[in-house]
Image (cartoon, rainbow, N blue to C red; front, side, top):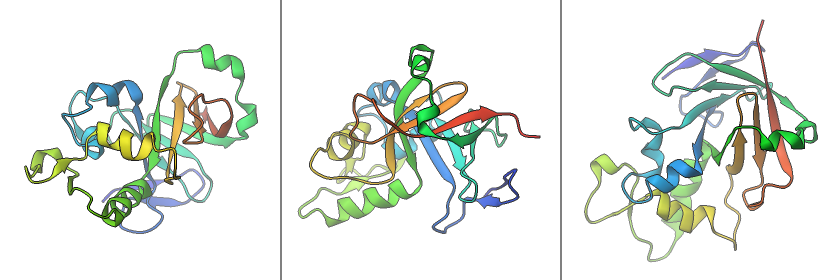
Length: 189
């Protein structure tokens, strides 16, 4: 269990409660390169996989980014800004496009898979993959969640991650035309 002090004075911890601050960003490119060989939720912990761990303060909505998931040091700090403040010309700047999800997404996935009648059993961690279960791979996640058009699954968004901006879009805004939320990098005092 880890704790982190937010500049607003709130203490964040990744224990078992509804305010778990952990979020992740996986680039689509990374997901496509591991479609069937890793479990979706273990990508963050796999050597050589580019993912970004992000903690979100539930008091002030700041984001604290750990560019190296193996490190416990915050590398970038972001403050929430109006989504309309995101400059459209920034879309031409270097960035990665992917999926941003919070810790509650794991629970959402578990509930949905448990409720499906006749659903296959899925292995969430590939290292302990039971041959009687299907691997919950990025391919399965895309088919069942990210490409699902007939139902809304909460706690994930399309995202653009820049050096100085993090911008979230509705899960079904595939063209990423209208930002929902945006954060801009700042230097804490």
